[in-house]
Amino acid sequence: MMLAAALFASAVQAQWSPQFEAGFLHDSNLSRAQRPEDRVADAALVARAGLVRTYAVGDADLSVGADARSTAYSSSHGASLLALGVNGGWRRKLGLGLSAPWVAADASIAFENAREDVRDGTRGLASVLAGKRFGRALEASAGFSYDKRVQREDHAVVPGYGGKPFSVQGRSLFARADYALGDRLGLVAAAAERHGDVVSSTRRNFAIFVASNAIAEDPALGADFIAYRLSGGRTRSLTGGLSWELARRATIDATLTKDDTQVSGGLDYAAVVFAVTFAYRQ
Amino acid sequence: MNRPLALAMLCTISAAGAAADLHAVVRDEKGQPVAEAVVVATPEGTPARPARTKLEQVEQIDHEFVPRVKAVLVGSAVSFPNRDKVRHHVYSFSSAKRFDLPLYVGTPAKPVLFDTPGVVTIGCNIHDWMVGYIYVSDSPYFATTGADGQATLAGLPAGRYSVRVWHPQLATTEAATRRDAELQTGTELAWQLALKPEVRIRRTPAQGRRGPY
Image 1 (cartoon, rainbow over the protein chains, first blue to last red):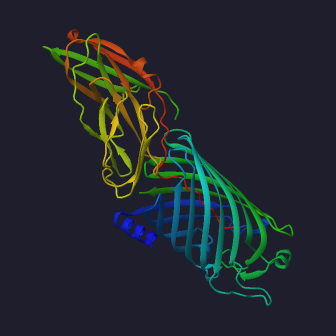
Image 2 (image 1 turned 90 degrees about the vertical axis):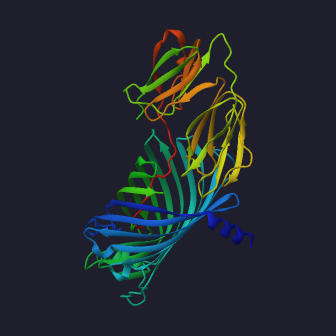
């Protein structure tokens, strides 16, 4: 009741803040395939628009928001998608001052509609994290997240195998550091390790067929591509990047992420994602 | 990015009977005007004319302190009205004044008294990028440069002064900027001082984009 009263009182004061992102990315292995002949590299234009509203709850901030996101691949048109989602976050500082540690929790859910129906689904992400600033130049954070994606329709093609390879879930530990090199330029470094299901799309491949537990055709990457869900995967990600502050509310970021995924049976694969993003947040 | 900047300050003091105006121009080494520099003139030999403090104000507008640099006379009270629709939590750990105004909207009931000369760095505990400075002057003769890098100290009593400049990015000590000026002579003074690069906390943090797993 008190929380509801606080939310109501804050709603009178709060206001919606717009956020925009637009950018380009290149994925060296969109198919997440092991064999070179199955790897599909592609580039995409990405855009996101959202609204966020912040409420004061006690000593913490609670935010709610909604956003629309699109990814348009230059060749793999079937993987292009439009997503609509809602998100929420809670953040509280544990003390007074710039270097006081903080804790946060975030959750989001998005409904994704891809050109190829097999890739339609709902994606959810929940995370808890803690961070601390070390002076004005450095901020570090670390946390845990749980992700889950539910494929909307069953596209079974093999008897005895589920037809929802894009229904996956995983748990991640992650850490991140942002370091200011000067008044406008910043460095970003992040690392993550995720354990859970992964999806590898390849042409017919007996080894991956045996190891998988859900299979469906994946025409987004080619007429003869099949998506295989593999459980027990471990993905280690390293991200490095530069961020240029155009104005107090706008940045251009360039990041390079290297993913190395290990799956039982030796079905390992790697991917490198390069992204350049313009972001504006009011 | 880390290139040293230089600050050039030109002061012209002109006498007009028993009072004079001091006009200061502050520029960096590239000749660009430097805003938010505090110019302070301290009379030498004779005490400063008694001055009455007034209620000063540093607002919070659009999640920033306005003005970002505020010069006040020692003994002044400063109010921190929040013009935003979100709460702010203003604080300072500076030795010249430690205070804490827990989360609030509107105008706090009590202004904060600044009774020790020095520089007070203020922040918001919710929005880390909000940083401001209150320069508490022990002399009543001070002014802050505008966007054109200029400031005027009007109506100073004639006499000998030491003039100093302070800026958030000043690379040297404030004392190192001291220049002496004799009011009656109309002395023209110039300084070249290095400025440190400013490390600002971002309002828009860098993005972290991912591909599929």
